[in-house]
Image (cartoon, one colour):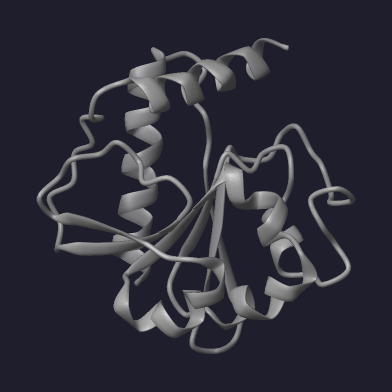
Length: 166
């Protein structure tokens, strides 16, 4: 219950707070967003909003993807499984725990019947490697930090993973 309360506070802070102080000094990145653009201001990061239907055709225009929670139910529909499997850039699902990201890759699995595990990372993602295998990635929620610092740390982790894997 404590974890659920913390997650709710994190979402409220995301919606209500000013920009997060996310430190990133790598190469410029363009990150495609399905959902709400995170409140991050960094001159090296460009956020672009896309729809689920246009992900595959825009995969070459971005360095990575994030999908936010308000799109999970629709994104888990069987229609999109093949699209997620075609992406060549890293993709992260922000706030997907307790579900496993595989609900977006398997046509017979949706958010309603997906595998749950309370120990899965708060943010999960993957990248399809050139040999056809998938590299799993995740960023855990640090419950021992302030809400603001936890958000900043999580997004720094996602941005770093996108930079390293695109």
